[in-house]
Amino acid sequence: MSETGSSLLYPLFNLWVANFTKLYPNVQINTASTGSGAGQAGAEKGTVQFGSSDAYLSSSVQAAYPYVLNIPVAISAQQINYNVPEVPSTIHLNFSGPVLSGIYNGSITYWDDVNIKVINPGAASLLPHQAIIPIHRADGSGDTFIFTQYLSKSTPSWNSTVGFGTTVSWPSVPSAQSANGNGGMVTACEGNKYSIAYIGVSYLKQATSGGLGYAYLKNQAGNFVDITQSNIQAAANSLVSQTPNDERISLIFAPGANSYPIINYEYVMVSKNQNATGMALAMRTFLTWAIQPNYGNSGNFLNQVSFIPLPPSVAELSESQIAQIQGP
Image (cartoon, rainbow, N blue to C red):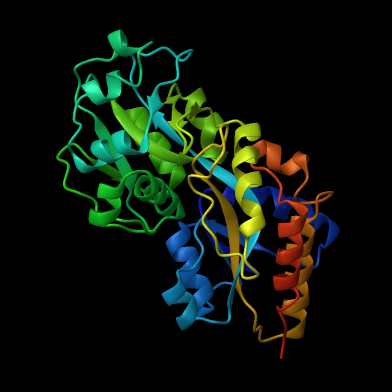
């Protein structure tokens, strides 16, 4: 079997495959980190068995490919990292959707802009008069999808001008840069002083070990919250009951005092129609193993990438979707 897609899910997929294939040595799974856009396309066209993505298929794309299942396998989140040497690692800058929208649309251009200083009273004196370098993904990306959803849900002007998607028409900002994959975003942010980037939580340790700071984000309740597992869990708890049978749902900007505002289901996208009975069985076996709390969804795996497990009700929906994968 082959898997390609989300660079955020890629580290977890590798952990899963290494352990699953010890139990099932006759099953071979090849993985590649290509971005969610490629993962979605691979699942739609049948060029891979699994396409992974931080983003579910839109209604229009789902209608065009009704045989593609969107199966959540875990819950993840996204951090905002920055490279501002004047701000020590003991301080986490605050950011809101409107301020991030201003940075990425070019209306906020310096780190000591009043809009940044006013939400960072404890660090205002540290913010330098240096131009901000906003970094965004160059490839089709679920991380772009959930980041721009946060901007759209928190900032009406962004929603009406740019919107959200795995790719968007980024406003022209002279200092802006782009990078491929979460690893590329980390490297670009590390290599450019005064830059800012959105990066999947599975790269949090890599980003912080490289000296990058990470932000507290303003949630729907108006609080600036850390990207802790408890705050991710709080956001998930407020919305998972609304998950439909096809499991396509946004978990962004969830209500709740402690809810971290950028969380999402990590999806595996797969065609329900397989050309071999053995392939269908192997796929069902792997995906069922992956979502079990005592196997793939255990802390032994998820804690290594800062994910949280699927709630039982969502795991049941995923099991129902997995059961639809059949051979000829």
